[in-house]
Length: 424
Image 1 (cartoon, rainbow, N blue to C red):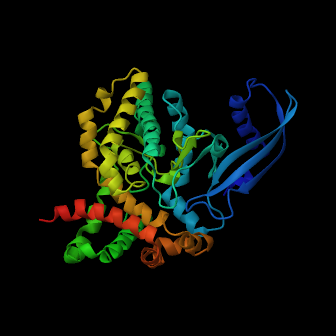
Image 2 (image 1 turned 180 degrees about the vertical axis):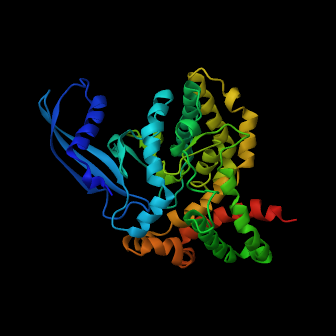
Image 3 (image 1 turned 60 degrees about the vertical axis):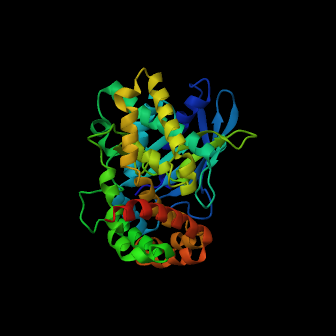
């Protein structure tokens, strides 16, 4: 299987040419490659579903004669871990992301606005991007995974550009994304046409088991515990239906994986308010109503208290951004996403952000000591996804206050409003 280290000199030259076409006024400028090397972004593994590198290339430009250093951000399938590679291949995440970056985002950027980093190479389980860190982009949350009002406002503008760009592109081509680029939006996170032993179904059920163990430790639920435990997984499983392409609401391409670490913010020299943001990691892209993305990004990186104070206002801002982006393309939002229809979809899907929060956060905000154990050993990945998940997460819940407080906050919002409210 090809990895980042197997990029040929011809491929290196090709991605440098694509980069320099935008970076040097005279695109005919020739160059020679002096050297190139890959180095990990850090000593610690960067993610569960990929290995991250910097690709550093030294060029000798012909005109003007000068040495130029280019740094790209690269993402490769993880090496040397059979269980993780098997998970990735069954999951289909790398091939989907390559399809999104090759076939969807370039046209969408031209149609509306840039929403993701420029991609200079996408093939063979490898993606090579512009290095956003060179432009002042960084992740916006601490370990708690929470974003500020200003960050979310900025993110909603980028998200609206993604969704509006999808509509604009379909209007220009006369074809829905599911027809023109089906590989880019096949549902791989919550598939329904699979057997009960499919890795995503098993993963979902394992996650629900963890959350139910947490529920047993929350004092306020003791009197209703049997009812909650009996109905919890069924209420959570609504997500398998909700993420499908809708026959009622407008569908667009969705990012599908909107937690804090997949959003990069660019800041000015002095202010702490972000100027703009880019979305990364399109491994779970899908074709469904935009409210799913909006509710996810306004739930996973927020607290219930924040949502009670700001959700209505931020939903209105998203709708305003959508209106503006479509208007720039001479399209009337009322044709595609009437305001009443948008808010009806928000009401219909409002549990989805909380479901995603529970499914994501019991993993992504684990204390570093736990994640280090998981990602550094050959057995760690399979241990987490099957054998030891409950044990590891219960240890974190019982010993780490930040982890416990965040999980209890989202669990209570979901159980109170989507499990107990159903009780006759």
